[in-house]
Image 1: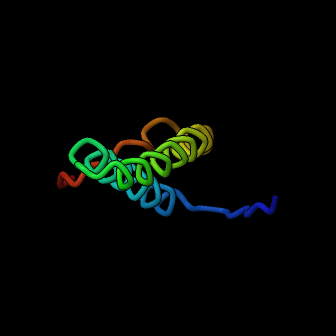
Image 2 (image 1 turned 90 degrees about the horizontal axis):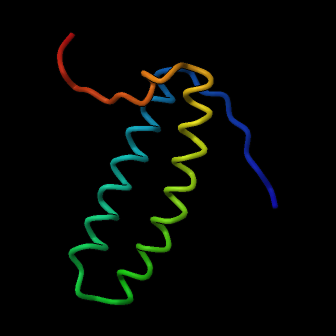
Image 3 (image 1 turned 90 degrees about the vertical axis):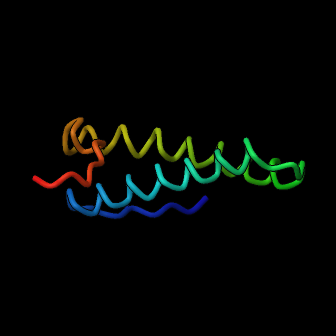
Length: 77
């Protein structure tokens, strides 16, 4: 299996974390609201893989940048 190694800055890491969590919410909503068993199966399988990625990514992000890297907020400073 081929792998990709990529170096991220703190801001890039936050952007990817936000994208991962947003996609997880979207796919979870599809799985819980769809009446199509094939759609549920497709998105459900992808959701499992996404959650595995999220777990690994979050562990590495916290290790590199600290636990606050996983805090997503659009509140003005």
